[in-house]
Length: 303
Ligand SMILES: [Zn+2]
Ligand SMILES: [Zn+2]
Image (cartoon, rainbow, N blue to C red):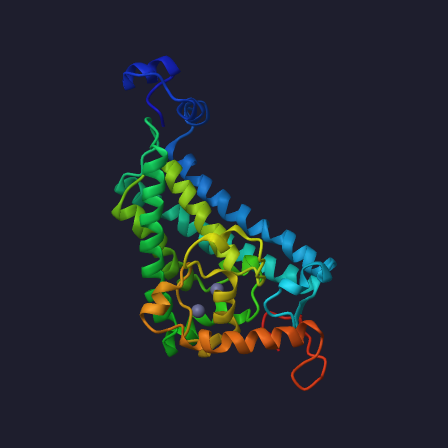
């Protein structure tokens, strides 16, 4: 909690006037404990699970509007499948991920995520986020690859792969141990380079956005992420789900360079051309042999 009760006190302590952003922060956070400020991250978690519902709704109600961007157009969601997936994910959030996040609070205090004034500059925020992204991408790559070792996959990671054609909120659909393992890289950056809680919020929002984005199941050409160099996006991760348990490809969550460096993008590169041809056939409603090739997504496990 801020140790000042008025803006004047805060300015006297800092020895300068507050910036506009600092005044907003003071007004917003002065009555809140550090724990309540930390709990905002749990709110982001739920918010970013609800947001993908809008895309799922469009897919169910007006599929023709976005069908040409769907990565696995042969898979069509039914309303009951969307609802079941959403309730499963909410259950996982409520009983696994949110408690894990709340239980991490002592670590946040220990590493010194600060809540006070002064606020970090835009440059400090940006440079810390870049460091977090690089640490996350590298460590997530190796942990994810480890989760594809036979025993780990069959007993833990298989749950996340039940959806071979993901939709946004599948990002959080995982075994509790999986959620714990793959949650670690998100903490590693802030542990090594502690930041202000505002930066930590932005980092969490960024992670949730990215998790949703790569699981949308759609490759929208107008997405601003297309402008980010080496960003894998939905197509890159969708392939990982499409191949499923046999997947030895596309382990990195955000960028493509780790898979390129360690040679785990070969299958993806090879299949990319072939898959785009298959997509065209699926979009026209015909499979490779001319048969209708729609798979309706009625259960957690794809037929
Ligand atoms: Zn995987
Ligand atoms: Zn995934």
